[in-house]
Image (cartoon, rainbow, N blue to C red; front, top):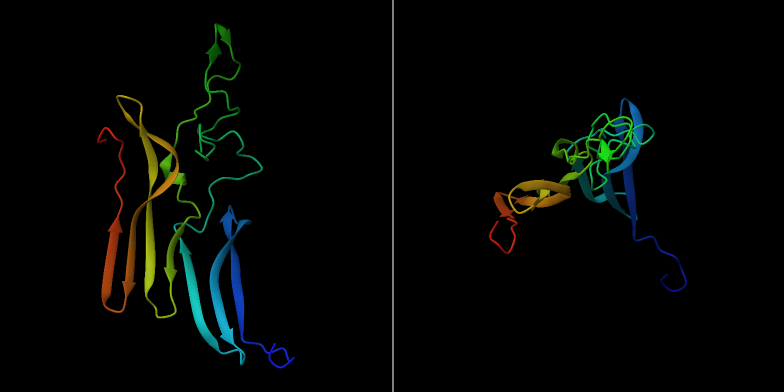
Length: 168
């Protein structure tokens, strides 16, 4: 308000589409943020790209296809019980494969933000890992592996390395 009069300064518009699974819309995704002035002239525009435009999992049918951390793993499980027997009692259907599969983890994850000046920031990820004492194993989720920023003729890269106190 200025002198009791409401004045439009800018409008922020969000443009959405959907991630797909077998041709069906399954998850909303943000494609673009547009900022216009009071004359509806575009002042700024931010575009978003993702590592995939599809989601591998189907929430209606894939409830048992999960790793130990709850992330989709695509395994043909019919239950979530990870053992085929317990204390000598056999479990019908055999053991569920609860292993982590990193292939599916980047589904729908942000890859790039393109800025109004046409520069961009790009993100790369890797699967979280842990050491069980002898082996390095996949854990749930992703962590940032690198961030690349490009503006004008300049390019900058930040790389991240993760390890334990033991130097792993």
